[in-house]
Length: 585
Image 1 (tube, rainbow, N blue to C red):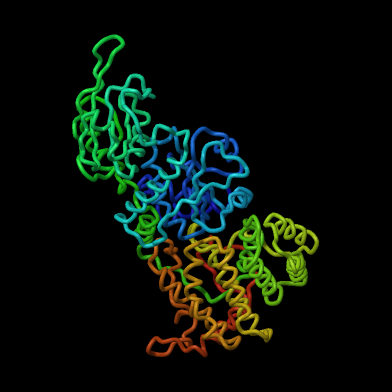
Image 2 (image 1 turned 30 degrees about the vertical axis):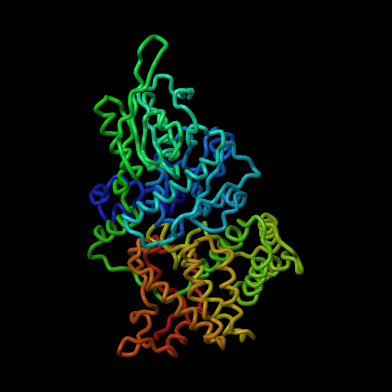
């Protein structure tokens, strides 16, 4: 663990009081400590296996059960918002553990780059289903999920329901998993998987889904077996189940009438007509509790809180009276170089193969970096080296080859930039999940537009097109990229000069800040505001509060051309006091 992480935990506890931290819910406290130390979003959560480069082969490969694995970036706001849903799903499916396990891989950890590249994780969060006995040539099946970032607890339940159904469809494709397949035969001829079964639950559905799920729910219950049937199965009438072709749940007791002979009781109708899995679980739980048999009951989705939102509330309560920290209108070299390094060493190399429009986007991005990224001679030679490593014309570039080229160019040209492991400065967040890389990318993008203006670039849309191409093809957070591309849809009609380019990106960033203000992913110490604020640029605002765009442009031009070389976070990132060029606006 980094020293800065340890210092932060100590500083946080001291600043808010150990008592107040102790007052947090245990889940909140565990989550707080885990994210503070950079351990990922599911550290110590019992139903999600934390997978990484060290344990993936031994834990996940060559097993007799299937896997559902979430691939995420710990800095990704959309991943953070998805965390409670995935925890609910994992808890909901915990009784399926003989057939299915749930895991998670943090793709923002450089050690996991190879895994995420191997399984072609281009956006996060990505959910993938894996059949048993994972091998190197099998990349899994993507599980569809909702992308509404603003869903409430009710719609979160719906999301878990949909995810569970999509996973069940994949399990039904496992021909060897005969237990969950709808039956087509006499129930008496079935060889029981559970020899001491006392009750048989018959689940009839015209489109089998809940039946197979109940089989898995009751997999570990020795005295109860669940048998799924389709509607109109001829043997249903022989079992005295006359449901007129509709759905239903029926219970039959296995009666012993001799040492080697058993018979089934007449069926008891438990549910007639359409039903939900939760209803079946609840009703059967009541029945079997009376019989003294311990069985699963419906998982209470609300028992897992929307932890990210709860923490934001907890932070605001803990820090009542403390003023939020405001942006100082300063750009730090360490932040834009951190963005550069992460994009070149993580986000681009994670692609197994880069071809077509993605390759064009890569070439455009590298060209813009070489032309406009503010860095010394060694850095310029490094960027040129990386740019030349992508051969033109070329049909494709392997992500692994690109990664090797970046490493080789670093060794040859020694760019002397500070890598992100040394910590952010202007983009340092209250916790590791806040700000960081997304903040640094915005900072770098703004810097590129201003530097293009400063150097009198020829194409006013060159930088913005390169940014757009990068966001579409390489940026790891799905939600962020989609919103950015939506904002940039009309760019061609609004940008006619290099100055327009600077102002267009400024307006787009403020739109993003407005959308995300109050979001669970907002750093409580660094609220998303309309920038620049009156505190750092009073001239940028008319008296009616509207921005004076000419003054804003002058402010941005100064801000992104006077870059601070300070490389050490101040007060763990809470204070980025201006050091160096200082000017009143």
